[in-house]
Amino acid sequence: MKIPRFKFEETVLYQDSDFIIINKAPFISTLEDRNDSQNILSLARQFEPDAQVCHRLDKETSGVLAIARHPEAYRHLSMQFENREVIKIYHAVVDGLFSFNNQPVDAAILKQNDGTVKISRTGKDAQTYFTTLQTYKNHTLMECKPITGRMHQIRVHLAMLKAPITGDGLYGGKDFYVSSVKRGFNLKKMTDEQPLMRRVALHAFSLEFALLNGNKTLFKAPYPKDFQALIRQLEENRR
Image (cartoon, rainbow, N blue to C red; front, top):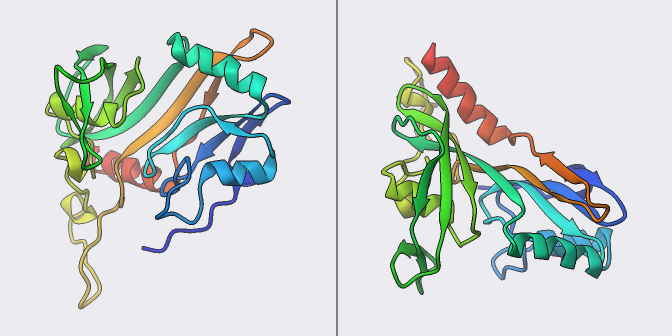
């Protein structure tokens, strides 16, 4: 699959003298990755030489990401993350039908050598809350509110609830094919159907924290095209 070149300036949602807030595209790493010729940090430093990324999103995850323009701004936001004062909201499409209303999951997470994680009493503490936003025929749009920031936290906590994220093969999620909801869907001859989304259906929807002047500010990131396309297909099938 050919990944389009990432244009940093086109992703900026907000900027001031302290922070740059972007809507990260999928398929680009937040930090340096030997398997990825581009990463957010290096691109941000072409835009602002002293830039530091304040938190991470997985390579496949899209959405709102905060970048500090100078060390004082980085320390300011890092302290808020450390004190769990930053409010992070993710949206995920999951396999199955669920009716959650601020459903808590408090389950420690242990990082494994193969790059995955598992629920384990010997892991680091992790808490997430889940709320159903919309149900479809065989899927649910879920709001995910992580309190901690562990690797793959939302993904493994949803898998624990038997609600794996669509497209998340690592933790039990299934790919979504248009043919599963669209009658008479025909492919070109001699071709195999590809998943509508070629990644985990997870998007960092909003981020709320206090700027250096003390004002708490909420930043929202619109869905990227592939997430929009998935929701559109689910909505059409619900009617």
